Image (cartoon, rainbow, N blue to C red; front, side):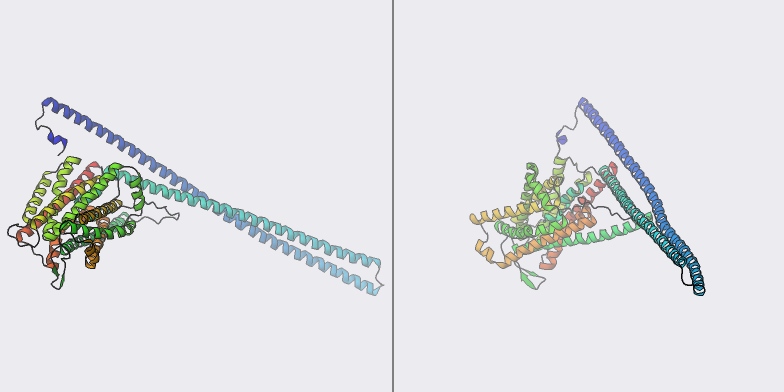
Length: 597
């Protein structure tokens, strides 16, 4: 419990008045701070919206100016060519007419002179002079025609140059308008993102609440199944420079959004159920490997590869984690591309407290895994997983003491239901005819639940500073290291009922079984991440609460592992209690978010 619970129930009146005054002052300060921050944020939003409107108005003015310039450019481009063609046509027509008249006159004069010379006398010097005059006229007309042609060429060249300049100016103006439009779209995106961010911050006091709830609530033997899928907020996309299509009507947008949300919810529910099924198959597989031989579906006899001792559980865990650590980076990079950047920053930033908390979390998970393996090998898998669910009893009380999260009356009732269900699911140590050591199995299951509660609490703390995907890889690496050191120590000290090294590595069935557990681990991790992505962490945790029931049903169908009626009843109470706890936490979180708005 918190420090306040250690105070006397009836403090003196003067102390009570001081406390009430202090609390009133703190409340007033918080209200004033909230009003001040809300006012500043509202002013910032209004200023950004005004700036956005001003930019839109300037862009509209520039667009109108661009259209005017484009029309003027087209007019100026078309006018020179038309004037040139008209001038050339007029000049050509006038030149042809002048030449026709001049040639006609000269020909008539030549004919007359020839007739006169042939009838009167031989050619005289005057005739030669007339011919020279005629030649001079031809030469003058030729020079005039050449001068007109050169003038027309100069006009065409000037028009072409002017047209090229106009095209250049038009291209530059078009580029500037595109740039302004891109800036407008970027401004719109920034404003929208800022408004969403402010809404989220005003709507939720703890941005890591969902991730913490996911870590705390997902009831799995698999640590990786409770990891939340990261959003893609670290990646930014540049808005396109092309004009955006017209927005849809509000009604059609809401309808499409509702249909998409319903489809995502169904898909997320399917992924969550699949993840729970894979986790249950994992539990039954461990029970088969470490327990007595079983007949799968009444046809295939398998299992009983090694005894469910502490050393053998370490070896199976080691083989499983080798597969997981080798393949996990490939899968994690698809879910979170900045995986190795975060891990390098985690190792180099020098935050010894965070590093110690992460390693301690992995150590608690390592201990929980080893003990649940021992429990699954000695007692029915459905019972072992049900006893594991004692961890909410510890996390609720510890959260009250560490984080000040005082349980509600409904939460106390739910914890009582889980306690009763756990007691009913316990095997009768004197009557139940179950293969294996019942005392060791029950104690190991309780120990797994206690250490798993420590893992959950440390995860809630670390999730505020480290993303779930790199955090899970750190946990896997810690488990691999400690399982390796543990099995070496067990072999060195010749721990009882531990398989020999040579026998362990020569048994390909045993190695394949460990690899199979590793594949199931990765598969359940992937399915759970997809479930969280499409349906949210709350729904994934609620579906995951059915783990004991699904495990017991799979064990009954696959290997014929039957339970007593009271154990089924106790398991049902535990499942109902965990479901109610998850739903109650979700409702409380939503109420807090609504109240903060």
